[in-house]
Structures are given as structure tokens and as C-alpha cells.
Image (tube, rainbow, N blue to C red; front, top):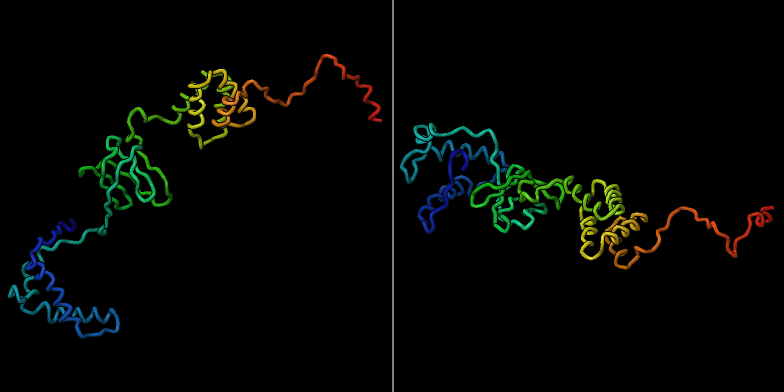
Length: 278
């Protein structure tokens, strides 16, 4: 609806109505423009204006038997409305399916929808840089339209189930406690992993290490974490390989010097090396 007016499609097979509507276009083409040539658009507009004032609007209409200009002045003019203060916005409408991650896909980006609509087909309306999602004519989601990056998730956390609506800090706190239960070295591995990951922290490495408890004891995982962070290999695959290959029993290299306090058959007093310094 625009200007408080609705547009209704033509009734199917009502050809007598269709002819009356299109005959006005045919009249302008045949009576005004047919057989005439114009230098430019300005000349054509001036000619059309004169034609309307001198011919089309002052003739007696073939169907109504009335003069169009007189009908406009006496009846139609008083019913005209003023133009709105904003432009007519052309909207785009499409259909999407809500995926299992509570998002729909639109032009390379992903927009969240309440989880109760997973699997539903929804209507998506794009207008004024706003994306609106409807289900059975009811608005269920509203997002700013992303026009820059691709592959971006625009998410309203309230669209998730309550048990999944948990902050990143809360998740880190839970994993920190779980790693401490494994052992001292696992806890150190976790803290160093956080320092190394920075703002790009994701949970896969830590969840992977914790999943090793299904197969290995806490002592094995703890020692594997010790070996991994000693060599700054802060990855799940590294910890897993150490556990799988039984490397937890191998000594961990350090930068400390080793001095044997006991004499052996190859031991020599230091003064014997002085001759090499002369």
C-alpha cells in the first residue's frame, strides 16, 4: 500500500477490463507521438504538455462522454492527497530455511532466528538496510543488513536455547577448572594456550584435551601437557600424539647444565686441560 491506495491485480480472464485500461496508453502513443520525431527529450516533453492542455484533456471522452479536465476540477481534485515526505522503498522478499545452528543464510552471511523455528521455512524481507524474518506473517527476527564482509554471523544470543546462552568468560572458567582437575601441568598448558591464542581463542583444543580422559588417565594427560608446553606445542594433536605413542615417560629437555658428582673412568682433573690453553 502506498499513498493510502492499494493495487489490485486484474481479474483472471476479464479481458474487457484489461482492454479499457490499456486503451489509454494506446491513445497517447497513436494520437500524440505516432509519426513525430523530436530533437531531444525536452522538445518531446514540451510537445506532450501542449498536447495534454490543448487536445487530450479538453476533448469529450469516448466512454464517459465528459471532458477530463472539467471532471478533474469539479470532482477529482478535492480528493487528491499530498505526497509523503519520504521516497517509496522497493523491498526484496525471499524464502529461507532455518538451519540447525539457528541461522538463515542470505547473500553469503548468516542471521540468527529463534531456535524454535529450526527447520521452518521463513519469509525474509529486506528494506532500508534492515533484514526482517517472518514466520506465518509474524515478525520473529530483526537484524541490520550486512553489506561488507562475507561469511559473517549476525547473532542475537536470545535466539539460542537458554542452556546455550552462556558467555565466553563462563566457558573459560569451566574449562580452567576441568584442566586443574587433570593436574598442575594441564592447568599451565591451559593458561599458556590462552596467552598464545589471545582474542582468537576457540574451545576446540581444550575440549580435545579434555576428551582424552575417555581413553587415558589424568596422570598421562597431565604429563603429556607438560611435554607439549615445554616445547611450546600448544595443540590438541600434539598432546594426543604424546599420549598415543607413550612419550610421557621420556625425559623433558631443559636448558640446565648437568654435572655428575661421581668420578668415572673417563673423569680427568681440570689441570690436565691447561696445556691446551698455552
